[in-house]
Length: 325
Image 1 (cartoon, one colour):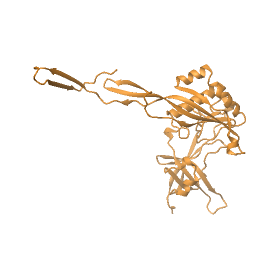
Image 2 (cartoon, one colour; image 1 turned 180 degrees about the vertical axis):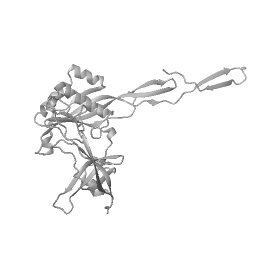
Image 3 (cartoon, one colour; image 1 turned 30 degrees about the vertical axis):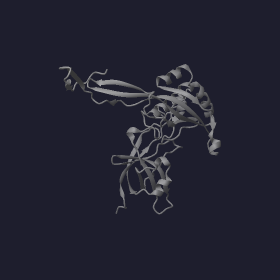
Image 4 (cartoon, one colour; image 1 turned 45 degrees about the vertical axis):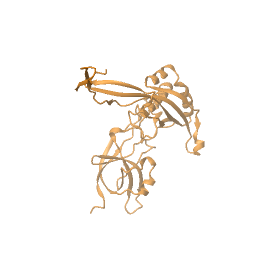
């Protein structure tokens, strides 16, 4: 006899990445070039669980980023786990037909209970557009974060694991390390100072692209005893000619870097020391090309029959598009 809401699902458990002693950064091979934790191989196991409605109390238990309507709550006997910082393992996932969910929080009832089981909450996971937290690849925020990561990587020879994207769902790397997050990215509206570029993707189409200068504030945080030295060095190394040229070629200019702040004091935490810098940057924002409406050519012929008769017009409207390029 099945329980209420019970149905089958696939439990996806990721492995632990083996470190490579020959890899840069002390064998920290579990982070990719974008500063995200690279997924290891996984094992899929069929299981059953009781899917129950998500309540307001459930939402209040989860951190703000997970308070979404695309959320499931499941009771199961499978030993579901969220991210394992000690082992360096990605959170488990639930595959329900064509939909994938990532485990956000768990609650376990062990052998001392009548029926050992696990209750877990999982949020819908888009494997095709996975990024760092809420930053989607290809956006201005993504581009700015990667440019600042490149400053530290090339200027201080840091590995991918030593400067990561903040708010990634994967485990954290060993200390010391830095993370980068955009605090504000000014999208803004079209202004008089922006430039408009017209292009012709094909003979019958005219497209408009807008380019403009915008500002952004980016936070770089450091963890571990070596981190404040990295932050201090990074605030100066961006002015090295090669690094400065790379930033300019990517449409990014560093305006100012704040002094390094010890935010452990502000947070009043004794468990982990951390430091922070704020980078102010200007960047070139480029809109997606927008196709302009088709234009029509209008030919006017004017004939004057006499000085006392009103002029007559012969208007010929054709569908030919003039070539603006």
